Length: 536
Image (cartoon, rainbow, N blue to C red; front, side, top):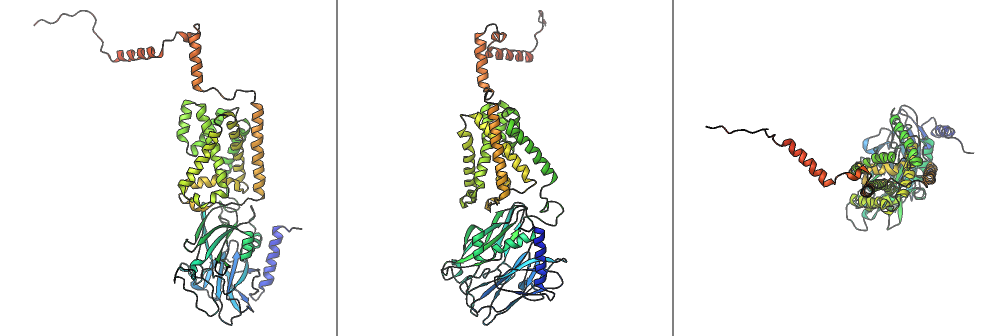
């Protein structure tokens, strides 16, 4: 039987209390996770004993959900011998004959903080994460540094160095660029998503274990990219507020075929302590009201859009205006052309279809980092829709009403429950508004909630198209084109002499008459009668 998260949390707290003990001593084993409660006043001493002689490096790391912890080599931490954060670790380079390692842990918060700790051993030929650090405080820094905004997440880390035996001097970091130097190393960046709509501490603790060691990272994470030593060691990802995600990097030595993992980092891209827009309530009330009203209009469009197609024109005019079709809309609104209207509807549907294409892993291909390539490809895919349906505007309008109208319901659901489907259009909006979003990888989770909401979207779209197709099958497809109306009226006037409009003068004569009237207005009035010239 699966225990609820609250029970798991209590069990974890009890385990942490038992393992830490009243003395503040935490006995660890290599490769084993241990939960521990930390406080601000009493540091916990973490000790590993009986380390094997073939182990040259031990990476010790500790993780908490939201409260920062301090990890150090000494009881009195200094900047170059400690680290502070929610995901921090230290690397111990073992001396000859050394079999014991000690670290000290404490929290920065006055309350007790639940954390999990692990120590991972590496051998002589394994690369050393952060061994060529030139940017951060620690001499050897295996940590990944993460910061986020509402738009993107940025991770960076120090370059690694080659492994070496106990007591030997470390290889020089800048001695050369050949195969015998650190320049042969490769860096694989992995991403792992936590369960959607779950902010539990124990869930994080259990899943971060899957992203700490090399084999478990490869088994559970998704490899996003590979960096060489020539590349900068920083990567950008799209921000997913409220969705937990874990990142880690595996450094690989192709000569010895050995690997080592950096210290994983996690983020929810939101704050747990803010009163407004925190991780538990990301959407404002105004946002929820707006998208709820939009969903009502979308349902109306989905099931009645073809019958009330002038209303749909107005709705799609607003949408097209948002995505940059103002000139097209202005031309259509002035002349009332059905052809332009169908082009508008096709472009909006093509916009959504092209967004779906780039929502897939295709959107993370390196070639689409270039804005010119991306927008040319995006526009070409979007224009395919009106081109393919140019001969059947009725089907195009029905599909647009069903698909676009039902997607507005998905956007409304995203205001209340996290779903990755909202990022179909949101990531594209970010790319339009942010000049640097092109560098971000836009991979998103696709879990149970997303499959359910996707099924709802498909069901609504199919239902809307089917209902409108059956209702409108005996009706006229669209009002005739304005040119056809004019041509039909001209033929009727020329054949029906009883029609008063038949006796209307030709257009040229009417224009000439109007010009004469205007000319008479500006003409000087001539005096009436006869005048005799004055004789001098």
